[in-house]
Length: 297
Length: 297
Image (cartoon, rainbow over all chains, first blue to last red; front, side, top):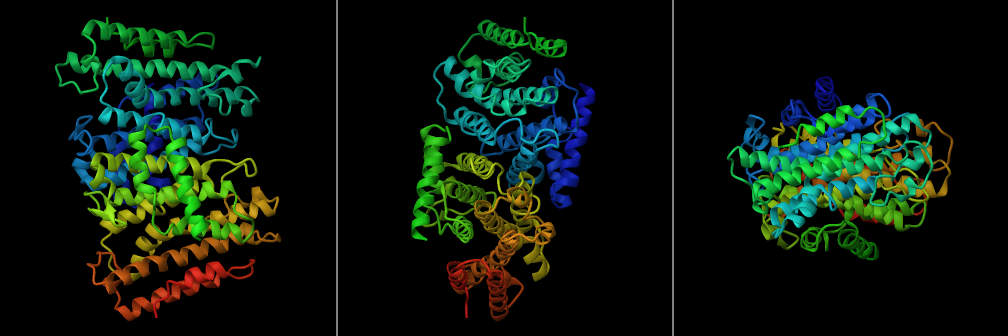
């Protein structure tokens, strides 16, 4: 995991300083926003699912970094004064606090643009990206990240089910699920010749895949469902630890809707749901242990 | 032209209300930002170049709307208080003035995300998008739009050549050039079977195309160069009319570097450069007349 984290840092640095074309001053701000990052949870889940089926290669690493760039853009914009107005992230000033609001806005835009480059880039081996661009746009937009942020800010959420469905699922779990499903798709595409069948495979309706009698072909569906369950759990974990640490809880924290015990029960249920998807493919001990770290007894 | 404008309005409305997945309140803000639009210059140039080679179909229209969505996102973000702080656009409140800054930020993000969906979407006929995604990311980011905006705001431009190269070329001409080149590529792909040769054809080095002895195959290069020249001219035209209308000129207006007569001369030179690229392909009278409207005597 530490090796992957290092590789991710190093690759994102290269993407920004050597491949993006931006002038040095602007690239500095892009780097500030991205390296060193946090836990790199999303790209690491992507690579872990990939590795169940095939060793991680340069292309998988680029792809995983594309996922992380999406996460980075959303953090930079979410921190802005007009959104969450956060002055610190990971122990240092947020981008707009350090470079000014104008740069915060531009840096976020640039990171989203850059992310698309690596998410959609074909590799010599796999001619198409693991998801259709329509699916990216949905999961990063109207059926995921941006929509979840909209509900987070303006949703007027009344009950816990709506909170999970509209905010936690879209704002957090959609991107994590995308990371897992596409990591699996990329990994499987190395071990099978069924590349075409796998494209579009991680959408809402995965029945066309499961009906095929082909080893591993349903893996992206398990990965997707794992990602959805773990993604919701991860957000619940965040809500609960914030509460336990005595911080102010946000208006879309689960603790506004459930007491601590029920929230913990819900967290552990989602973690178990995630673990249930880890059946049948190779050595899943890394993913299992990864998930179990989030259990709160 | 009016027909195309109407089709663009109608198609963007559909993309937002029916295809984006966003809840109605958020879709309203997206629509407010995009329909009715301005002159629709970029998508119309895209369709006009397409039509030199093949009639405009649904796919070309979707693609042209993708281009317009990029333009729309950049306007929404540029208008924000931390950027140009504009309260009005096209005679009505800017998005952030009407819906709040937070929505301005989210709406811009959502429009960029949506644009990628239609720019990269494959059609049944043309399996790949007209440009490689790497090229999109560059032209919309580090070698184009976002980079140009960065230079516009922080470039500390000292002379007119740098202004043209760093700001006008990147902030304005890159997207217009992309619109023309990809319109031509899409149009040509209908009349030839040479789809693969055309992909990647509009990048910096177009020599691989010109060397081929294939009818129309160099069209995207002419379109690209037309777009670059017209794009710079369009920005100069904007600078000059702003000055003639007695408005405050921005710090990256060409009138800070040239007197009126020299600025007009430069405008008309770039317009002529654009017209020179209109040689040899079908009936270019629409494009020629389009360009000539920007001449200031």
